[in-house]
Amino acid sequence: MSSNIQQPLQVNSTLSTLLTELGEECEKVVFLLSQLKLATLTDDQKGDILAELVGSVTHLHVHTENLPESIEDEILMLPDEPDDED
Image 1 (cartoon, helix red, strand yellow):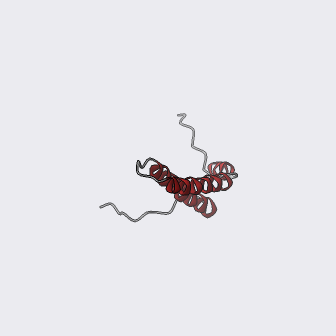
Image 2 (tube, rainbow, N blue to C red):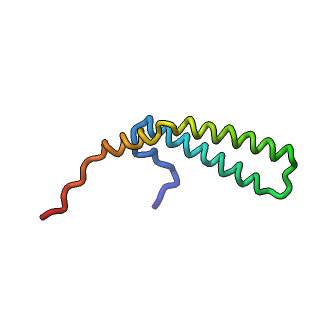
Image 3 (spheres, one colour):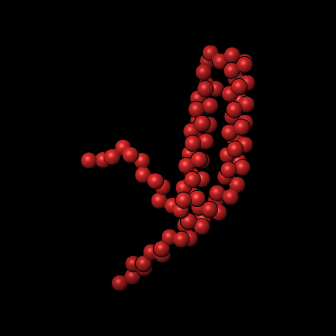
C-alpha cells in the first residue's frame, strides 16, 4: 500500500528548505504563466499578472543565487560508489 503523505527531501535541512521554497515559487510562476494564456484577460488583469511575475522571477533569481553551490556541497557529501572491479 502506498502512502500519499509526502516525505521530506533526503538532503540537509537548509538545502531542503531552499528546494521546497524553490518548488513553491516555481509553481507560482507556472500558475501565472497559465493565467496569461486566458483569452478573457483585461488589460488591468494582464498588468497585475505581469507585475506578480516580475516579483516571482526576481525572487527566483535572488533565491537561487547560491543554490548550485549548495547542491554541489550535498553531492560531495554522498559516499563514493565502490569500484565494480572483480
